[in-house]
Length: 322
Image (cartoon, rainbow, N blue to C red; front, side, top):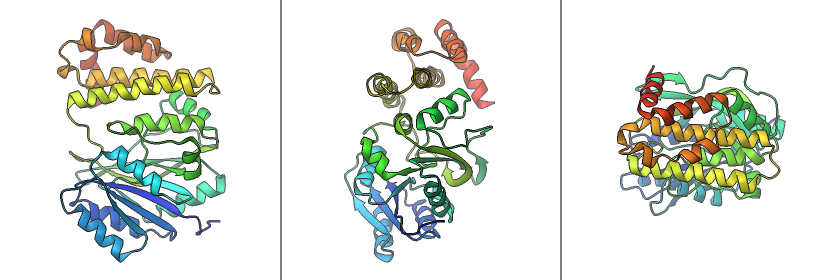
């Protein structure tokens, strides 16, 4: 039984998306769940995005418009978390949109199972073609601790770091002071493992409510190689430190799974961008890779990359494109 008195805070970072913003805001305003605060965080837009947000905030009291200096997606989400007053939190990027019954369905499960985090699937829309975001099989569909859920999904290659396909209990996020790392891309990859590791009750529900519109120059599109390279290093090194210093109560198997994930992120990034790397032997941190590899499959990938990085990159990219 849904309690419509539970406020849901929807945090929407906005930056120069005037061509896509209306579709997003229409989908939020059309929700059949009534207790909403929709936090529109304008990250210093220079187009008409701010005007659109302001218009919606004047027409509908559920929309709350805040403008800030440009600081990136993470800083906009963090401001949204500071302003949020709801029981539950949902992140929606302003060039995407959600189904009209999304919030009602999510709240019903969050309340019924008393969850800290609810994980789902999502749709990908490319040139008006719709596909499923993740092909999940035998997913862990019982309520579990975040630690066990993380271990299971990593073990079975079912893990998703995406933030927008999940609903969160705000009290839980505030309890541990979870924030997004400012000034980087790959913010979801840094945020999700930390949030999962300490959650008491997590569940996956086989539903799709989020529509991810894949386009160039989107809020989640990566910048140039040099910037992206530095951000990847901040993510993997930062998470490595976090696992070793903030997870004393976490099982060894889960810690190793997360560290192995970092090694995979690192090697896959270099393989994808091998053409931009002038000196592979100099630029790749082999010690980081070797000390964080625990799964046999990842170990094979890392060793092949170390021995023949460009051959590995061609094979890896061919598989990804296939």
